Length: 163
Image (cartoon, rainbow, N blue to C red):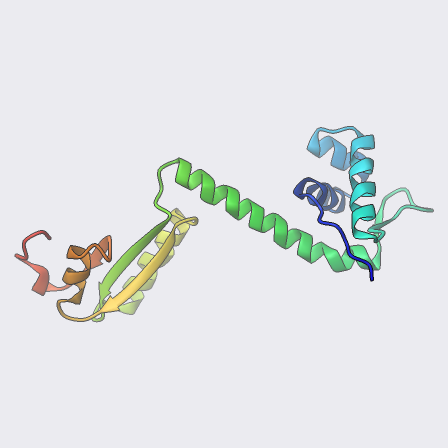
């Protein structure tokens, strides 16, 4: 039984860059590497996987094989995941919270809440938001107990010490 090796992220990035640019030379220019380094990276990736990813014979531009097309979506998914990881780390290094607990009153109009949540996601795409929808005094209690960082409540919270 064949057991494929584990490709490096750099090998996958080279693979995706060749697909996106259409050639080994263009991938080399985009990644600021010699064509021989690009070719070597793909040869190592193909050897590790035990699959040919590009048809190189009889064509000036590399064409994905059936196996290459089958692995393309997975490689893109890994790349997007790595981009997300790097964005999350950058946000943490820049001082953003990893996650925010947000408690709102059940009577808050859903249209307004949706608008706020979309704006938050657009402004802070790497911050995980946990939404708690509660009634009556539960919002105030969650904020006071530090179960929620932000709370939106009605007039019951007015005059409560600590709010």
